[in-house]
Image (cartoon, rainbow over all chains, first blue to last red; front, top):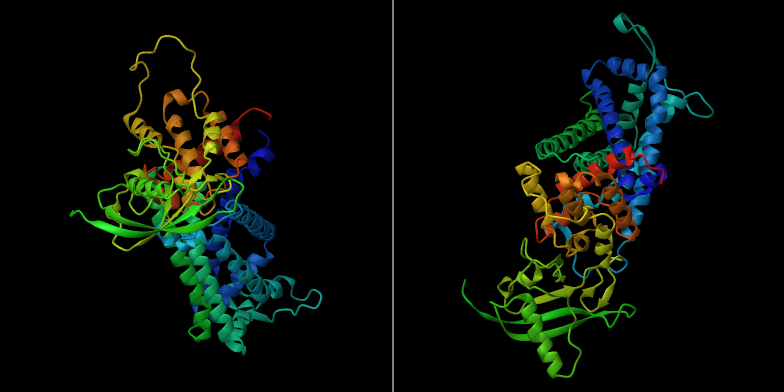
Length: 240
Length: 256
């Protein structure tokens, strides 16, 4: 058995989806944790310090390359698998099995993933590009802010950028709606994906599978609700 | 439950041979007893068709007691019809009401080409089993049954997996036309027993390779197969197959 044979087999390809999926899930934990600092309601001081740490630390920047690689591999492998799976039944059924046998979101991972990809393009354009590429080429650099006390230093004001996008622009309402829709897509993607990833890497102990179902759905709902509340909080002016 | 007779409309897939384009045809059947099985109802219709000098509807059947895995009808959008854990031959007409229209289709998957009407070619399953769904034992005197101790739980799980009758409902139900529930049942029932141990790695690798070669899709763990399975083969078996395959393909010491 060659490595190629393994990674091009049906289970091998699913294995790639599961591993990259779990890696992206671990990223979500970091992302939601750091972003939750906006609710410290300190004018973004804690959040900016955290964001600054993430963008100046070499290890994190290297991991960021891995993150992009993970997103790209997960996307391409997902599209390839979905296309291959869809081609296995040339003549379809007159009457569909539909929701009697499975959940709609479990059957729609390709669609939900595509929506997430579109969301990601918008999201990266809003925040990652100005924060990481600001000042390079024609990209506008983020405003700078200075803090005194324990966190005394000069920071790029990513928080101000958030307020601008979600509260201060003419497009804010539309952007907030798109972000919430992105979070809903993510929630359904994770409702299936979290559990499915563990099944794919071979977890078959019934006691753990029960725990996994509970954990997966809990994770999907809590994390995505927290993410969705961020633009909503900003739009409604709950955090300033 | 009270016995009753009913009249029904049947929309059935007719296809001359593997190359022909098929189409649905509608038939009316009268005075069908609620105590008949679904296949007996088709028998009644076929008797009528033969009397009229028409070609009867071809369908697979053998034991008619739910254990051979021959019958394979996709009824009103569900493999083996509306009842849970039931093959078509065990599905009775009391599942339907007077005047109902019933749509009957063959299993749909590229790997299961339609031979005629409702009959599909499921020999792909045979080839998957031939790739590794066995144990190699030299012939000779039968070994004492108690010579190999087996954990009761594993024996039960193995037996439950071995209940698979290879009917193909899992493939028919799956949006990816994946044969993973079938393959996982066949791999699991041997992997759970000590006798399956020696060929464990090659079995998982070869059976999955054959499954892919036959043109079945990949599993996405949606669970439609488990819901449709007449023998209630559990989705957990697929996770076990994943574990068997991954540990085998990551550790086997063979170049090709």
